[in-house]
Length: 487
Image (cartoon, rainbow, N blue to C red; front, side, top):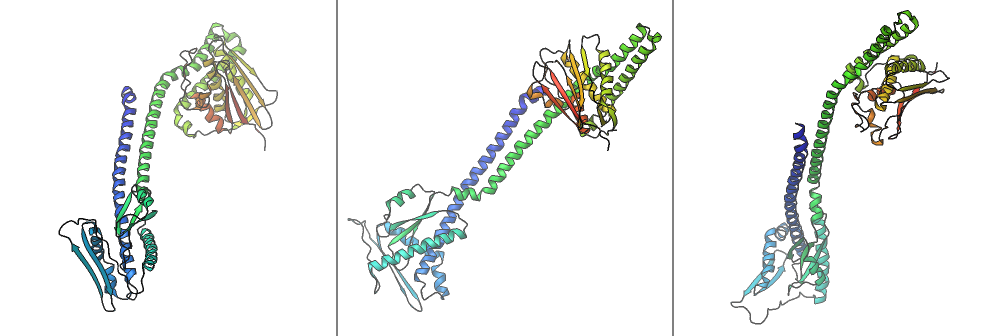
């Protein structure tokens, strides 16, 4: 299963994420194209509405109250007729358009003159007639007013259609169909949207009007904003779910492996106090200490301490969940740290006297009292010294010091071991974590619970623990606990 997961899990996840991204990209691409089409349709409707309103306003003076008049000139059917007439100008026919608006009716005359054969010389010119009092100059001035009105109507229609675009127009000469501005025309050739050409005044025709929007991508993305956000959120959630899943699997695998190793290593850990008791009993029988009551009592006390420690280790195993959740209940009392250290150091010296190890304890001249749980603090000291001995190997030298001031009691456990790399200094306190084996250290037994337990207990006592270490220069664990002060 491990081989399967390592070889196929990550590629499968990568494939799943790529497939999700691909599907989302394909869907968003299709949606983008559909939205572009819809935006162009909306722009078609914008200029169509503006052209109809402009036509109506050009002839509505004096007839604003005529509902039939308004309905006709604002109807899409009338616009279609006018647009068809405009579009057919290039098909070799002559046409005439005239209007006569009276009080009771409006007469529109559209005439088509179709040649049987193509004309031999060019196209015919439009013949313009002006009403009484009108001149070419006055018509041109009125055309400019109508043009501004058309631009204004376009803006109003864009707002109503919720089209946040920056349109501009291109004007064409009505007679020749050529653009009035070459630069605007060339610019429009690269635009995303160009409308049909529309007239914007029914009284006279000097120009036709074309609406141009250089880019519609902005409005398309704006309309798609919720789809884009939802797709991004879905991809992020998918990625987060896979990351969380892998972390859970990795964590479960780590805990599974750690528990398997714990089962084997715990046997060695439980043998430690047993070996001390065995050594004590062996000394009693070998040296016939029954005749030396003082030494006999000392060895019995050591054996009692080790049996007590064995009981504590069993409790620690049984209370792993409570330890991890910080639910262990402390029973604080006035505790002499130096007495606890002397007891632990004596036991550890006896256990390791045949291994060439040295444990130096330098007590403080000042009393070191804390308000703490004697059981757990004693076990903390056991863990740190035992840990230092295991990793320092043959010729281990452990220096234990204790000092205090008015506020704190500081205890230092310094060894001459291989040291710890910087990247592991924080992780050594994690549950089940063990520093990867050093080539100079072989078969060091451990459960990965000792330092985790130490940190938990020190913090529950309101203290802190720090690690100072350099590779090849040993390690120094420093505990700081609040000093006991009578209230």
